[in-house]
Image (cartoon, rainbow, N blue to C red; front, side, top):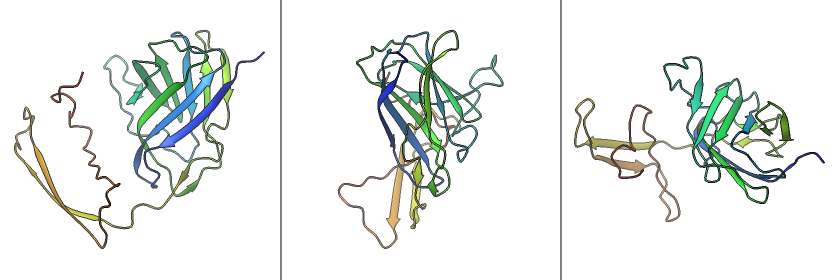
Length: 204
């Protein structure tokens, strides 16, 4: 019997056109996942060919581009991207009864609307053989809506403006146009990739 993927769920941290979002894929494989396997996610052509904030990470791999990603089930993961295809390798095996989760960070949302093509997720073994494939992971396609209609006016102050300063505190003062911030809403600040926000926060 051919291997299958089941229990597929897909979530976006936001669905505004043109914004960057975290995309989370969760599913089970009838054969599980071995550390020698890999997972491929094909994105519709409506997305950027390199999906999001991909960059070359290693001097000895100048033509390879990686995305930031994470997984609870697979432990340490690497996510390489090339022409709408993201290839994920993990450092932990997953049994068939357990969920596999993958979060790709800073994916660039496509233009407003619903993609005609579907997300395709596959598991491939060490010999390059496709073990299982789900050709419509997000069955309805990926749907995005209009960008935010209102701008946020803000002022930012920093305690240390030195280039490559060891650390700094940032204070943001902002004003909302014709709206209020509800108790169940939040404010997100996305820093450029040049910032190393995680180096001094005490987190492993």
